[in-house]
Amino acid sequence: MSTTEATANGITARYRETETERVLTFESGGKTAAIAQNIEGYAMLKVRPSADGDELERYYGFDMALDHAAELLGVSPHDLPVPDDADDMGM
Image: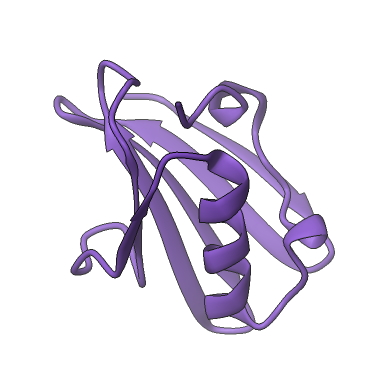
């Protein structure tokens, strides 16, 4: 399991794949948010307060999931860095 990372605007994003999920986690100012999708990459995106936290909401589109993640962090969705490996998340 390899992890790719991107940092911008004081936010660090980490993308990794587990046996069952693709997970994109954001950290900023002590807050975290995560977006997860099944490993096949075709299911709805789950937004969580952390990588292993309880699901808060599901979205079809990556943009909507990013909006929710940004809200959890208290930042603009446009400020979230997205590692290249995570660019194709969503349906």
